[in-house]
Amino acid sequence: MTRQSIEDRILTRSESVALPEPPAGSPPARSSAWRLLRNTALLGAFAILVAAAVIVSFRFFPALGTFVAGTASAQAQAPVQAESTQAAPAPADSSANKNPFQAHVAQAGVRTCANLFATLGQALTAGSTYAVQTQWDKTSPDTHAVQALAGMSYNLPDYKTEAAGIVYASPLGQTCEGGFVRVAPFQRSCQEVAGTLPKGSLLADNLSNTMLFNLANNGGQALLVPTGNTCIVVSVARMGG
Image 1 (spheres, helix red, strand yellow):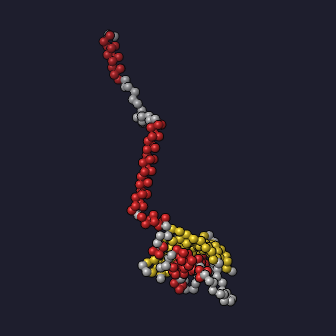
Image 2 (cartoon, rainbow, N blue to C red; image 1 turned 120 degrees about the horizontal axis):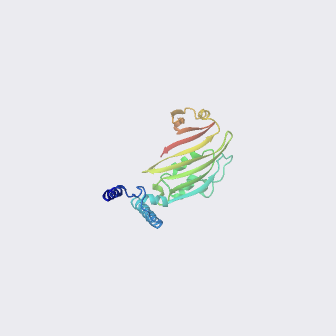
Image 3 (tube, helix red, strand yellow; image 1 turned 90 degrees about the horizontal axis):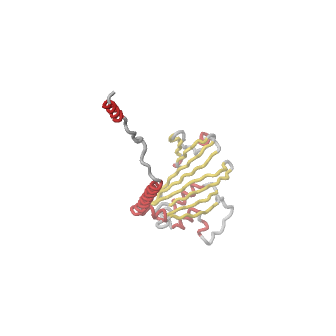
């Protein structure tokens, strides 16, 4: 074998050997210090954006901030009123005769919805001993809605339990509209409860296996929610005046 042929074979073999390439999926290494700096910068920018959004919302929607900052609340309790067997002298302080709903709207300065709110409150809590918390707009109480949350205890011969409800009223020009929602449990099936509704009440709809009744004499509506062998009755009524 000649020297020239040996050199040709060596050159040819050398040219056919490919140089090793770096792995395709290996990204360039970054130091932990660089990652920490990047994450800190991103979090700072996000915090600035959130703060700016809050400031802009209160600038373009000032009523939202005013309402949240201007609410107030009060609490009171009153037992179920029973008929008196003898006349009692009128107290010197007329506020002593007010129920909590009347006392709270007087305290708040609500005038347009004062009577309707008190009437709805009495309807909501009739027959119970209750505690109520009332909320109103402190800056302009007579031009905004007033509402109260009530916890009620019933101690009747055939009904002893606790219930809850909300009553609300809102001015509409020179008049007022409002309503209440009461949620009360019954230790019987909804079919049995339906049989105790006021005579003349009609089944209006069935909302996902939940019976909705229109109560007699424009008494509002009752939604009967089955819970096993018991029933939750959601009573709803609206009024205007």
